[in-house]
Length: 280
Length: 184
Image 1: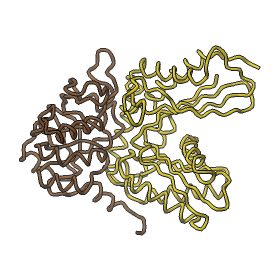
Image 2 (image 1 turned 60 degrees about the vertical axis):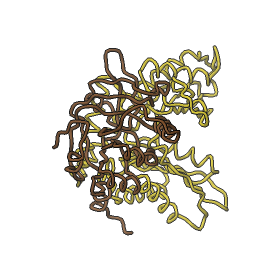
Image 3 (image 1 turned 90 degrees about the vertical axis):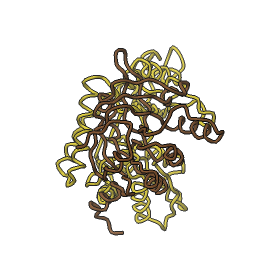
């Protein structure tokens, strides 16, 4: 059993919030380069070049990539042999978000109640997903989730008879209705199976797989390729100016499901695909 | 590339066509969701708005906080369609242009045709780049809304593209059709 003090967690979350807001991961920059190489639309190429210039400026100056520095979503994989000491685990994460927001000059975008809608002023609280895993380490993934794209996400309880055709139709329809709102080119995370709630969670997990990685199951990987092709045939393009690049990647995660149902969740992620990880 | 200085006249907006690249200089008024709700409440109560919209350009933005020595933080466009339900009433007050990302509803496109106004797109997710074109920023109303307060921004060569013009054309629909490869 290894002791881990909550102050270390707070410090790590603070740093990850700031880095996520200002540093676009290498995998996204590489995907933008590939998109530029394959684009047919001159206007789309211009937009993609601006996304790269913005990322370079943000990294160089420490300015946030986007003014929507997001809702903090924290995936925590806690080793069973790691003992968190010195305080409350959740509170340590919220405190890290608070410090990251203040010290990184990030935008407070959270309202204390969705009904009263008064800004909390420090972007807390975070959404936390905690998992127990083997080992004695804590892996933290901090996501800065923008809401232009979160707003355009959707979930539908399809039936077994709808099948793959139904999934394809729902995914493409969701992307088409979203148009330019979610800031394409997108990363499209799709959950299939499980329950209503777990399906949405799977879609979120899917977004944060290594960008463009194929699912290990060949049938699922085939669906990912087919969906990416269909989404990029919509013509929407970067920022909806038209073109071949509406999505950079499609990731599908599945879970065993009930004989009566085929739940499908589509979580849209903007090109500002911001997340950072640390292992404590 | 066109250069325009705000406030905009009917002649200015009337000369713009879908796809025109424009560099805006002068004043932009920043307002988003919460400020629009208050505008609507004020108008419903027969009150005047805290800002005069005649000839003005409304930028849908909620900037991140300015760091010491800087005028503003990251400041890119937010989704315009969330403001659709409020826009026709503001166009009737003389608003000449809005700046955001994503498309507008048919009702807003029609209202822009009727009132001679345009919708500009700015590139979403380039808030760091766009902040460099903002020379000054001050809160002019609803300070308690924090990032959603109404701000007066002074910009120089702020880059936008005409998405909807006074003829009711739509850049996004036209360009999407051009690159579409899906069977309907």
